[in-house]
Length: 245
Image (cartoon, rainbow, N blue to C red; front, side, top):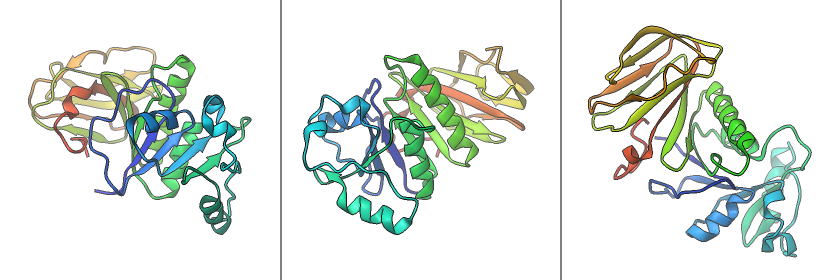
């Protein structure tokens, strides 16, 4: 199993339901740094335009150097070694930009060769548009061949494109499947309460909501298109890593 990206954003944060590992790349995405401080998590990097950290000590700290990464790998390395806050590398992004802070963090993970990304604090915040942006960011990293997980209070969301997702025995609760593509063709849902064979899901009809695990092995697959799949976080308790990896 490869290195993981752990992204902690500024939305509602409910903790991390699995142990962190030494090799994890932990990124405090803007105001997510507060959660790191509260939870005693030492991030590998602080990244963002800092708009949600304006009231923190970070803004008034003389030790923080605000710069943007250069595309040159050498200059990037020099920046990371020189720009820091409390000894943590700091990357400030411009406020006016195309990428959200979360998407910038995802791209950094992908640049580092990381293909497993867990995202916290990006759902259920004060602004629903940020949750929608997080879902689009999940779709982006899926298109890049990575596997991503968005964590809410009781559920997490992952995505598959032209592929399959296997669930081991013992999974409980609901499992919902939605098409992110205009159409998702050749959809299979095996081992769940409601079976689907060679189905076609569309992004304007939520027929895949509220399926359920039966305790048996299950599999969701799609021949063409992208699916969002949500299920309960309780399935991760007592498991050292996500059971789907």
